Image (cartoon, rainbow, N blue to C red):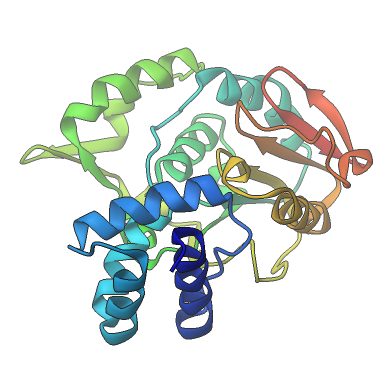
Length: 269
């Protein structure tokens, strides 16, 4: 059987059996990740991988780790967070309460970045952060807030470059080679499963941050996701995207103004 057909059957089977929809993800990205999972699970073909995940749900859970993106850093692309701190936060200060949606939160690095920043700016107590992802294991890791201690040097440099007002070490405890972030940072965080491919809007929010997710989608799914963000955002709410992402050519482009084009912050009409 043709390799492309086998991969498509695998993706269709995952959708029908486990209700995870990768059918409109970038084919090159899905192929690359599926190959990684296939090798890790000891399969030689996509058909063999399909047979395995049908017979063994635990194998699918393992495969899911490869099919979803889990790599990030605290305050990744510091300019993005500096723009949020210097330009978006002054607007948010005028709101009695704030809801922020981190879509595709992976292992939680971006969630804690926003929590730290909002705490430093005195807004965390009146902010609700919705952290969503399609990967349950990633959500568990995000909620735990534990990262390797050797990553803290890079995280600290990013935090300082983003305009951090305190030492990042103030927010975590070092313990046996790990950094455990303070539980108070996530007291107003809701971690929840949500798929941009299949699920609907769940709340009105003032800010959506979805970075380095759309680049893995085909155009149709990109448009669906941006449509969800537009519907979720309150009037004049803020949308932040990844450094390689843009609203240009999206069918929802006219629903936003470029607020800080260089750092990929947009504002809803």
